[in-house]
Image 1 (cartoon, rainbow, N blue to C red):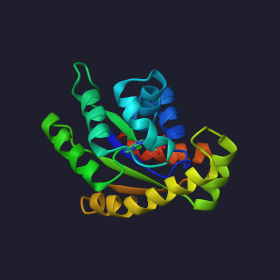
Image 2 (cartoon, rainbow, N blue to C red):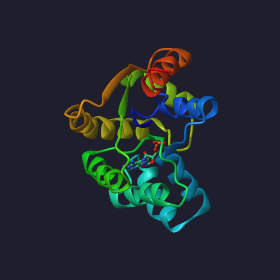
Image 3 (spheres, protein in one colour):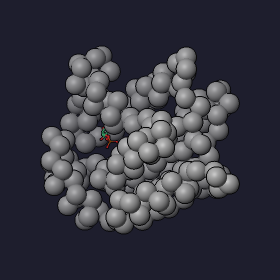
Image 4 (tube, rainbow, N blue to C red):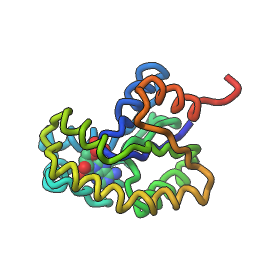
Length: 186
Ligand code: AMP
């Protein structure tokens, strides 16, 4: 199964990705995690990405597209995976499409985590990561809404989109996500 998770920061998509990794050994690729790691280690990519991340802005498409392409092209790269937080806009979705068609690995599901902004803000302020100050959170949410509608519309034309209620308890969300991703005949 190859899937994409779309959801605002604080919607719990990272938590669901971790659960799928632990319980079903699914490979998950989170661009936010990869970028934070790059910033932490002070790599060239990290240095470029840092100011954008600190401002709650998207990192330029070329940088994230290249990060994902590197992961999926390397020898022994997984054929099944969940992309968490990528693509974030239609330009990235097109880059992903051309990468996946080059690799012969079409996408099978796009899971959209639906949740109110007010709940997201409460969750994120409780989480207190350094990039989670209220103003940054609001900027990230605004950026999310600005690009997501178009992104979801892009995937809807291909009948790939499933909506889930991300305000539900973690285990309820998990059951729903796993049922969308697992083959129906198992
Ligand atoms: P996340 O952990 O997914 O919320 O990502 C944290 C930050 O990393 C975002 O606010 C962006 O600055 C950056 N980022 C993560 N994924 C992407 C992406 N696909 N495109 C652009 N920027 C990204």
